[in-house]
Length: 130
Image (cartoon, rainbow, N blue to C red; front, top):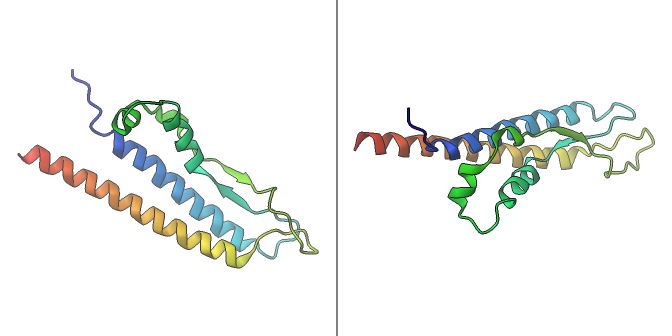
């Protein structure tokens, strides 16, 4: 049996797409709770998790870093945004405008990640045909 890292980029892109999807759901949930007294907004930060994992391998190429990434450590987890203080009387800290901008931005990120995975599969398919 032979081992290959040909799907390394796809696996990392898949983790990023899953995290992006989770963030979209989390932001939509924030918007649905905009009028819930005491609700604190939630968010997902996958970028810092990925940066930490890739940053642990200094002085290596990106290809080498991606091949060595431990996928089990690339997990996005929602957290409560306690730093975003509320000035509202009901102690809710969700700002509709901010959430909508973040949601639109995340949708673009998700679409770009899916497009990147599609292109990577196309490159693999083309390489197998030659």
